[in-house]
Image: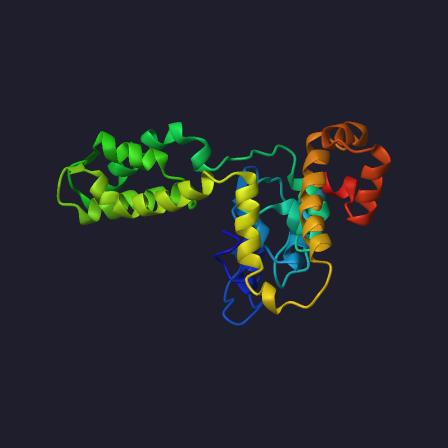
Length: 280
């Protein structure tokens, strides 16, 4: 887990170290890449990896070589890398927080795991699995959920995805003394669902208005300026970028969808500083 290990330790954990490389290095230690030679290494939360360490990961991918901390000998490794992140790496590349060359090296067979709220049909199976797991860990008979409780769990939006679901099930198992979990055992979800559904019921206009109200609370204290132009620019940029993404950069098709002239679209791309090749 690249986010859980301190930056100072992550390098030696991945590449190993030689005896005497630093205080406490009383013997040689093989890194994860050497240990996984001929197999697969899973780098979780790679989006949080420091930039200087990203360069060394790139070397492993390109040269298939590693050098232990404190060593001067290059070691050949044949290791397949599987990486995961909950961050938008394309956005981090644009912000210069993730190496572009490493991103394209890793992005060979991407698998986008959609949020749990978009695959609600998986929730009953996951609930059953986590109930069995939690009860097994506590060494108690396996509990079940009533249909009402299962409907509540299925309808909830789960912003924390599977981890949130697992913790919710575990908490209910711990706090309830009954073999059957009811909707009352998940009362916290009922309040959250009400708030979430209120936002989901809003139209696009309603969502924009809600965002404007929260962003412009101190409007009466603002000086005169081009507020209209600023807000319009903030809306236009993501709209045009989204349409260009969906049309794979085809500006003629994008202009038709937007209902504007192609020359107008080209000018807006320049004015709004939208780098078509970089963004798509």
